[in-house]
Image (tube, rainbow, N blue to C red; front, side, top):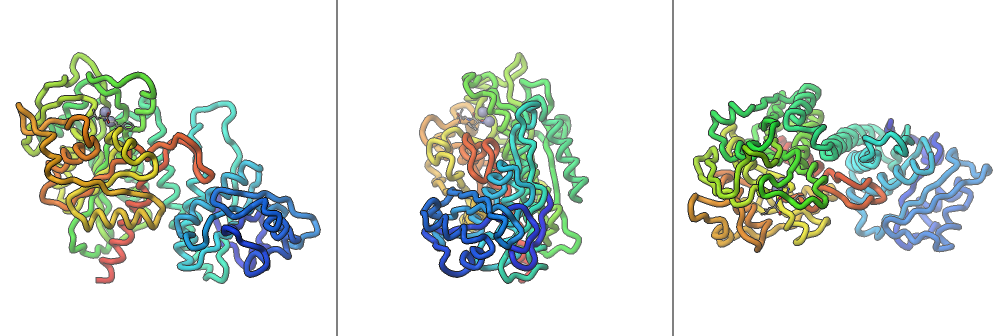
Length: 504
Ligand code: BES
Ligand code: ZN
Ligand code: ZN
């Protein structure tokens, strides 16, 4: 999809269809809609007066315009966006996404979108481009029949009265971000056989080469040398060797970040069968997406490499399969993590925390002072927060607040759960320092309490995305399947941090 600036008036843009945001209970008697209604032959007023569309979020009305209407486009899509007072950057992204998906379904090839938000034009254009690109993703990669082949070839972004240079810059940024979100979603969607830890490392290498990142991939021998007994205990049951991917972005002209090295760590379990503590068969196929945290880190690093902010960022992705075999770790086994801490493995299905423990320790060894880790870590998080909010927990309130606030700006929701020290009692072991499960109560919190054991001495926040990484149903602006949750938030954190650092 080619994305460009709509210069001049929207009705003069040379496209097949216009997509226009309509606020709740808005009429076409004044302002932008009134102006556009003339060239559209009075159809906007007609639709709104008939109350066929009341501007509620998710509503759309598709209209063919008469040959006598004097604008260029012959079709019009009105997209309900809800209350004007709540309409923001994140809504623009969804509006553009809904326009792309709806009009693609009508076999339209070129569109102009009018998001109708006041404010920073570059940012609004970025949001629109990002949403449009994200909307093009489908999970039917391996279909040979009934595959969605239709495409919007050209999209023009119209922002009333804005400088076209600013819109252009926003579009380029938004495109990079949208493509990076889709990169993560494509990885999350890959079956286990098509994305083993080795293949995940290969993809990370391609990203590093394409985006100017440095990369190091530790094999099992090097992990052994580092004493990563916790990570290695998870791959023991599999024929596929574990990999630890290290990506680093270093700017040419670096602004010294007084807070030190920001780093992202993501769980990369390319298939989670549960191991000896085997999962039930129902829905087990979905455990191909248990590497979403890792894919999120790689996707965000991809965008960071292309956007070139002025601060360094480290990405660490431990990758492994979790399978049962004669060599697999058994419940009751004790393993030794890189930090020297001993762990009693009560349940081999609580493997995410085992690989993250050593990855967090290694990030610290590489100089990380602020760590955000993300993982499809616990089924319990879906019970607590459903598929609306991801959980966030950690030891540094400033970092947690930064994630929540960046998330708000890009339309990704994080809800903080408590992490009082009392919860750590649940992971005390009789035989070792700690155990890898904490009983039935507060599963998401005790998983975080486990990680906290390895995140001492740094500012740390943990995102549990098990409930939000996969959408069971399609949305108007997004296909079902991998959501790409947190990719945009991570990028936003880095963008904000770079801006702040440059100013001081
Ligand atoms: N990968 C799963 C968590 C998960 C569940 C992700 C559903 C996505 C959807 C994780 O490794 C796991 O199995 N966790 C166990 C932990 C338990 C054994 C303490 C769980 O949540 O049941
Ligand atoms: Zn598991
Ligand atoms: Zn898992």
